[in-house]
Length: 65
Image (tube, rainbow, N blue to C red):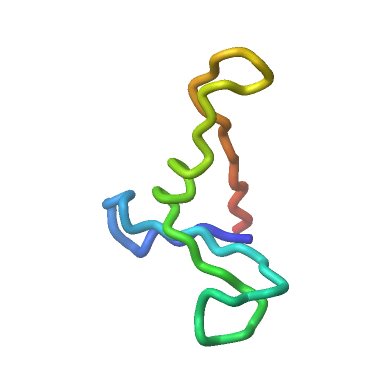
């Protein structure tokens, strides 16, 4: 649902805000889950994608003003 850069230039502390109907990962059951953006990025690495080598699957986030 969103991306938070934590108001600094360090990309290693950015978080993704995801809609999660189960919402089990924090103590507030509000339907949102926060995931470290860098960890999420590296978690989705797949070297063999449809039987051919790829570098990585990209996920794009559009920011509405």
